[in-house]
Structure formats: structure tokens, C-alpha cells
Image (cartoon, rainbow, N blue to C red):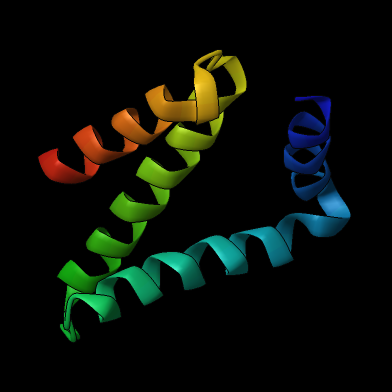
Length: 84
């Protein structure tokens, strides 16, 4: 578990922040493209930030998840993505 915490902490260090944000937003963009969302208006930005927020929330949730194989985190992520 400390490896996970260390990895999350490393990406939030100031020298790594720009790369971490790019990685997070690229992930959100890939998620939208995987469902054939090719919108080009302001909605695209809102969707991208929404997915990024859900993902980061799941990372934080995972830090306290004591379930086997992080099943509670997976459920958390599925619930919020389904709500979205």
C-alpha cells in the first residue's frame, strides 16, 4: 500500500504536476474517444474534466480501501461512471 501512496504523492510534486495533469486529461480524452464521443464544443471540455474528477476521486478512495483486490474502489468507480 505504501508503494501506491508513494506513486500518488510523486505525481503531485511540483516538478511532476504538468506531466501528471497531461496524463490525466489524456486518459479522460481516450475514455471519451473509446465511446465514439467526438464532440468539439464546450461539452467536450466539461466531459473531459468530469471523467478526470471521477478518476482522481477513485484514486483517493483507493487509498483507504481495505477490500480484497480493491473491489470497493472498483464499485466506487463503476457507480460514479454510471451516474455520469
